[in-house]
Image 1 (cartoon, one colour):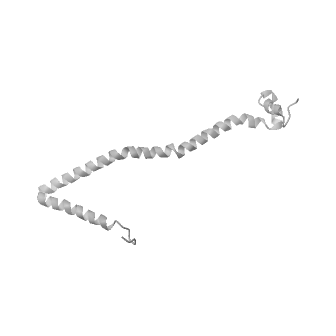
Image 2: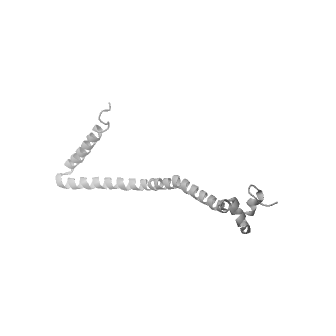
Image 3: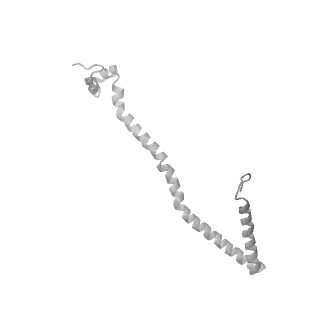
Length: 125
C-alpha cells in the first residue's frame, strides 16, 4: 500500500526524514513536527496565566498580612511614647494638673470632630 493523503501510513511516514517530499505534498509535516512544541508552549502559557491570577496576587496580600501585626505594635508603641513625652514636657512647662487638662481637651476635640464626621452629609442619622 502506498502512502497518500488520507492514509494512515502517510501520517506515520511523515515523521521519517526520508519521506519529506511526500509529507510536504500532504501538508502533514508541519503539523506533526510542530505538535510537541505547540503543546509545550500551551502548557507553559496556561500555567503562567494561572499563576499570575492566583499565586502572584496572593503573595502581595500575604506580605502585608504578615507585616501588619508588627507595624501595628510599633505604631501603638510610638503613639504611647509620644503621649508620655508630651505629658512630661507639658508637666514641666505648665504643671502636671494643666498638662492633664490640655491632653484631655485635645482628646475631647478630636473625639468631637470624629463624632461629627460619623455620617456623610445628606444621610439621615
